[in-house]
Structures are given as structure tokens and as C-alpha cells.
Amino acid sequence: MHQLTLAEIARGLADKKFSSEELTKALLARITQLDPQLNSFISLTEDLALQQAKAADARRANGESGALLGAPIAHKDLFCTRGIRTSCGSKMLDNFKAPYDATVVAKLAAAGAVTLGKTNMDEFAMGSANESSYYGPVKNPWNLEHVPGGSSGGSAAAVAARLLPAATGTDTGGSIRQPAALTNLTGLKPTYGRVSRWGMIAYASSLDQGGPLARTAEDCAILLQGMAGFDPQDSTSIDEPVPDYSAGLNGSLQGLRIGVPKEYFSAGLDPRIADLVMASVEELKKLGAVVREISLPNMQHAIPAYYVIAPAEASSNLSRFDGVRFGYRCEDPKNLEDLYKRSRGEGFGPEVQRRIMVGAYALSAGYYDAYYLKAQKIRRLIKNDFMAAFNEVDIILGPTTPNPAWKLGAKNSDPVAAYLEDVYTITANLAGLPGLSMPAGFVDGLPVGVQLLAPYFQEGRLLNVAHQYQQNTDWHTRTPTGF
Image (cartoon, rainbow, N blue to C red; front, side):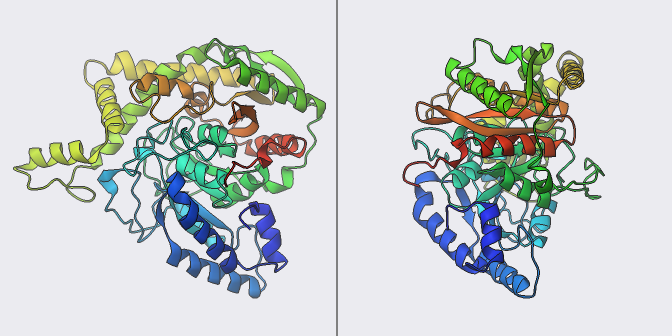
């Protein structure tokens, strides 16, 4: 049963081939057996999962149906789940049990999804490798000596290893799409505001967006359907109708205009990945798409702009973790200042401290105009580049990452080298655009992803293109050895 996709699980449950309870027990046993190799889970929620599975079976017995009714999933451990540890991969929140459910958690639970647990992640979603977690690094199931990508690496590794069919993630600068590419999954970052951020512990509020990780575009459509929608509790949520994503998967690609930015094919891109990207272009041309070269001239400024804006917002968001109201508190503080300093110094890991320091510096009185304000102006130029491009094309296609997954620890001494792995993904977050990564081949036995970007609220177009591509290729069906 562990090889079934979400769509296949929905059909199996509808046809009474198995019950949600049977499926849940089988997957919980598989996680217990295999996850020690991967470290993809922080918390398993067996009691909650079995309770939800029994409730889903009862709802089906009463004539209810639904693609997510009885389907097992997991949540990245920054979505608040009532009564369950929500750690954000940090010592700071190791003892925090959320008093409420995040909107995404509540919506998926209402749709009948079964929560198997909370997945490991880079601390406070800061990282591209899933090595900064307080609970230790996550391993890539394709090669246990390599990283799965971050910060949603726990969700990605668990789905890639067939521990469960799909999971939630969040994407601030590529943290759904990058691990999807490095573990042979389909991962979707929706338009900013499409999925509620209420109850999703913030890293950078103007960039964060929740989304699905699964093996196929079809499964991403199912999970996004349950996650998306307006939320009055979230001031950044956009009141835009949610289409039926699954209904649009089979649309023809005849005449679809695909743009390939020339800036993507620079010296930093592994030439073998470039070849796989062009092979995917040829595949889409066979399906009727029209391909042309385009330009995104301000892309070169994206990384410096992002690594001013995101740490600046992080330094503000993480100021609430002070040892006073919740979370980690140091032992025997001498006074209030000592409480603040030692609680934060002991509770936050090195990467989080680094970004807080960068962000506080960028926002300080003498440097706000020179750094933060300038970065926001560059952000606007990047958005303008995309708007101009989408006047000429329907989809933008390119590599998701410049390299395949690197070895654990290989970039720990050089944070900037890890930051450069986000070069193709962060522009979508700066502009607020939807983006999707889909499997497109292998380099040295490690998966490679191709990224698709679309205009605002055109997630359905991304899913349609990815689904049609997956109907004509089999990269997404490959399974890591041993899983």
C-alpha cells in the first residue's frame, strides 16, 4: 500500500479495497521501521492518526466521499497542531505544544486527511539542506550520505521514501521546490496569499507560503485543493476563488507559450542539469508547446536582495522568542537582560543567529536606506521583469537547482555556497508568483528537477503542464533503492 499515490488511495478507499485504518496502521509501521535511517519525522502522532482514520472510515460508511477523506499525510513542523509539539526544528520550541490548529491543518482535517506526524525541517525554515535542525539532519533516501534539500526536507524525504503519499511544506525562497527537485518529487509553491499563513510559524512574512509535496502533479492538485482558500484570520490571505485543480489537469498544451530565460544558463549551472532541462523542453514541444528564449535581466540581483529582506523580516519575527512567555528559558537568569540573552543564545542555532544578526544590521538606523530599502526596490524590478515576460509567454521553464544534492556537511563551512543553491527559486518568492518543480532525470544517480513559473493564481496551469509531462515520462515513478 505504501506505493500508492493520493489519487490511487482515494480510488482504493472508494472501492473498499482497504480502509483508512488499515492504511494508516501499515504506514505508521513503515515509518517506525524505516525512518531511523532518514530522520524525516520529529513527532509521530499515532493516537491522533488512528482516531482520524476511524472517523474517516465512518464518514465513508455514511456515504461521504472526497479525495482526501481517509488519506494519510504529514505536516511540516511549523504548522501549529493543537496539543502536539510544534517545534520549528528548534530547541527554542522543543517544549511548545500549540493551543490551536493552523488554518491549513484545520482545513485538511475537515477534508478528512489523517495526520501521521510532524516532519523535520531546517530550524525556523532557515536553510537549503535540512542540516540546521535541532533534531539532526535529514538524509536523502536516494543516497543517505547526501542532503534532501531544505527547509522542507523532512516532508520531502518521507514522501520520496514512500513513508506516506504526500505532505505539507512551506516555501520562503524555494523550500518546497528545492527539496522536491533533490528527492524526485513534485512540489508546488502557490501564489503568495493563496494558502493561509495563520498558524504557520513565520520566518519572513512577505515571502512565506505553504504548499504540497507529493510524487505527482495529480496528487499536488488534490492536496492544494484542501489547503487553498481565503482566510479572514490572515491579513495576507487573498479572497480569490479556488478552481478545481484536478479538473484542469488534462487540458491540451497545444500552443502553450513557454519561455526559457537565457540568464538561467550561466556558468553556475551544472551542464548535465542544463541538458536535462532542454530534454524536458523537447518533451513539451512534442505535446504542442511553443518555446522561445526570454530575458530576466534583474535575476542577478535576486540573491543579495533576498538575503537582506528575508533576514530583516526574520529578525523582527523571531524577537518574540525571548524566554518570557513560551518556549525555551535559560536556567537561573541573573536579571531580565541575562534571561533574554541566554535564552536566545542557547535556544537558537548558528544559522538562525546568523540571519537574525544580518537582519538586525540591515534594519538598523544607519543602514536601513542603504540595504533594506534598496533590496525592496530590486524586488520590484524583479517583479517587473516577470510581468514583462508574461506578456510574451504563458509559462517560464528552467532548472530548479544549479546542482544535484550535495553531501551532508559539504557546505557547512561556507553558508554563501548553500545560499547560491536557491538562485533559481527565490525570484518567485520575491515576486509572489506560483512555482512548481517536477522530476526531470538523474545526475550521478541523484534526482534533478525542472521548475515552472506562471502568472499570479495560475497554479492550475502549472499543474496541467506538469501532469501532461508526467503522462509522457516516467521520472516521477522511480523509487529510491531500499524504499
